Length: 92
Image 1 (cartoon, one colour):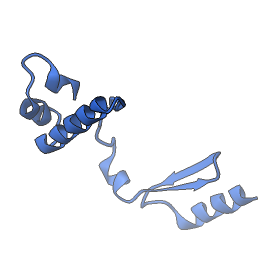
Image 2 (cartoon, helix red, strand yellow):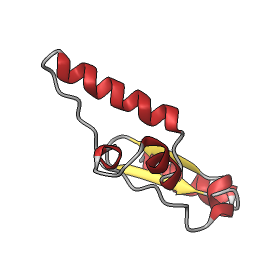
Image 3 (cartoon, helix red, strand yellow):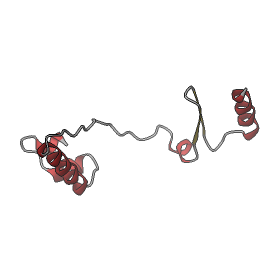
């Protein structure tokens, strides 16, 4: 969003460069302006979006969280019997 305020920067150009719809960038700018007007602040975090390394694995993947300490990620090619053994072992 900051790039759209930089000298020579335009909403359209910044949105196109970062593959974001210009209307969304305008919306974020309006929200920031309103927040500043009421004395509040709007916190935006910088993010970088990257493509998954292996798109085919991401298409059928699931993530299972068991409490705060255990996270199991599997893709569509997971062996069901092996996954069952892992989950039973973690349940103990």
